[in-house]
Image (tube, rainbow, N blue to C red; front, side, top):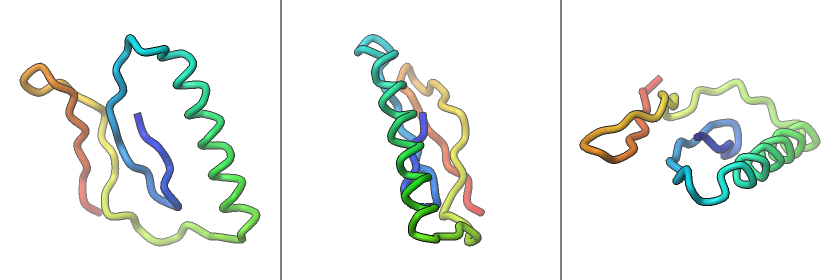
Length: 70
């Protein structure tokens, strides 16, 4: 899963058994509010972020979120 922090996105893992549907809905609402805030502030996201989030994979039985540098 990813969450928007300013113009960039940050990856994180969420456990699938802890009210996942409710969590995804709240994450969607947060993302829409964050995008609206950037719009109202007149922020243009033209710069590159420190990294791009790759899909979550499993490494040694644990979730792993990889970032690639731009």
